[in-house]
Figure (cartoon, rainbow, N blue to C red):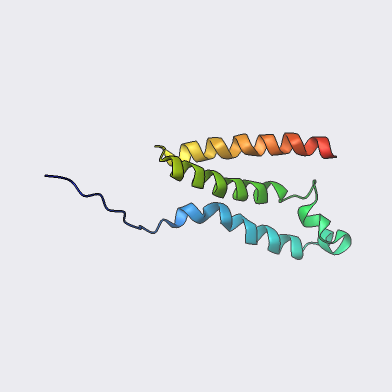
Length: 98
């Protein structure tokens, strides 16, 4: 007998965890003294305290889509490795622009 494969959408709130840092970083930045002194550069400048969190959240989302598309096993381990690799490449490229 043929087995029929079904895709079930199961809510997994922990997949959204990387995005939880974004509103925290924005709120922290908006209410900090540095934001009032420097403006938007305080949030998105190269030495901003939460630039790393924004970058990790973005790359985590991108790499998770890559991992799901390729149907790789051990999704979270592969996602973490790809995120860190992409983050290292971006930081390395970013160092040339400054």
